[in-house]
Length: 206
View (cartoon, rainbow, N blue to C red):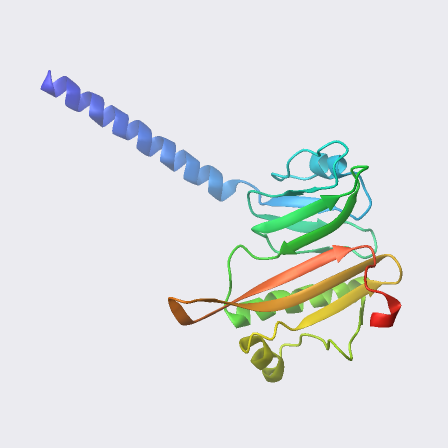
């Protein structure tokens, strides 16, 4: 009886290990989730096109969906599109008609050291410039450049912010914030935030 029990336990352990190995293989080879959208299109159309965990629309609601698994954003406007790294936080808001009105996200899966943060910021800026986006409010909110002076502002937790636009079509706000844990105050970590929608900053705020 004891021998049979040992054989049964060995088979069970083998099955568990095999299942774990298969899961790891699947996780390593599964394509990264991706939300593909542009402002103004139906939210349900976004869900059908994308590979993501965005929840279904709430009919008649004025709400939004948040991914529960990291996903990168592919903004698919034919002229002004860009792509972000995978994001742990990515929300897509829609209006009462179920059409996308805005996106909010942090294009990273964890808080990052400053140099890695600036690499993401610089890549996004280069994509926007190539796509024809232009900065505005540059007097009050100068560009977040990869320079010692800007890095010093970020380390002081000033949360520098920059604004981009495409004429009267889209506006994008990007900022970089410090993120420190009381238990480990010397561990510098940073978080990028992006907000994207139709224009919401008035002319007199430029």
